[in-house]
Image 1 (cartoon, rainbow, N blue to C red):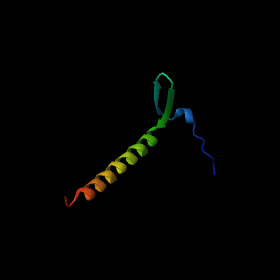
Image 2 (cartoon, rainbow, N blue to C red):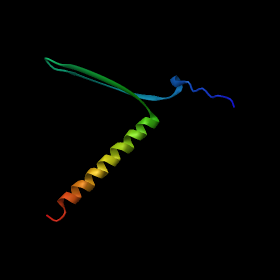
Image 3 (cartoon, rainbow, N blue to C red):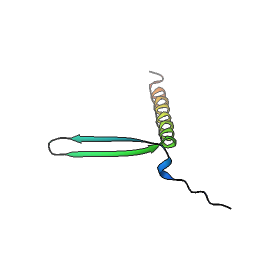
Image 4 (cartoon, rainbow, N blue to C red):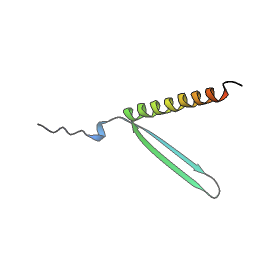
Length: 63
């Protein structure tokens, strides 16, 4: 069986950077995500929002 090698540089990625500077503190972060990773993040956020809506609805039911 022939082994397939994927060139990582050929995969399209999205990059985001964030920097925060205040008087006593400096913070910087950077992330690089592929389109599949972006889809996974979107699915995770959607499931968290749906779960939160269900918890709020059940907590406020009967009031």
